[in-house]
Image (tube, one colour):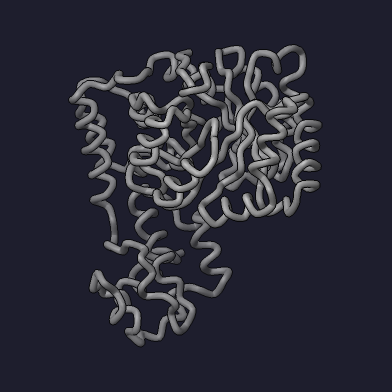
Length: 378
């Protein structure tokens, strides 16, 4: 196992961090965990050299922390660092923050949490956390030793990330990043900014929820033509670890074979490992994915609100993603929500208001019907 420095903290961590959200193979994070199997997987990872374990209060119907706590008995707790998270929706004042943290410590069967994160924030959520006194609470808990490092995980635009990162004395940040997300959310600019400030970065969604582990035919052809054969998973993780700003790459595993494969991969990757030819390959892979884009919708939402409630950018986003990653729309949660909320293209009456407002001048009405037919075909 390769170990990487964690920025200004002066410590190191395993390049492979075990994510504890996907036990039993769930994509949504909602399941009843097979505790015996999960404990075995966690200990297998630790025995293989993993020192960073990531969970959260809400994962797996609020049971992930409990199982992790059980797995860390028998001396395993002393060999690792734990990251868990405080969700804004469950706390409204100092007393509730204290009660939630204490409940997490109890479930994890530990007296301290190493990396404590404000969960999934953007600028609006950060302002809400500030309004209920979360920054002072995190400062106090660090002084008391209940947490070691003050952190946040991020979902939002780069501008929000830049503001949040410099608005408080953070010890670590967790971002979504992969070779397809270099301009999405915090993106490459956010990764570089954190590195410049000495703030260690932990990566989530390195495989985009598994979508980058199954290459469509035009992408696989590029991998197959390269002189060195590697799996799509190994290429994705190798690309991430090439970045010196990356401290830990999280990977959720639900089978022993996945643990072992990750241990093999992360024993061979380090900062600056990729050649110029490999970097060109990954850029070509990214472009090959993008060539599968169905429609050039930027999600600007100028077309919204639709008079009939159709979620136009949402439908186009699903359509593009299903095509890009060659996935089954029947299992797409965003599409499921659109249908459940009555926002489907079957409600479109072809009034054309969206097309008049579209800065890209897209044929929205026609493309909506094509997209909806493909996405809902039996």
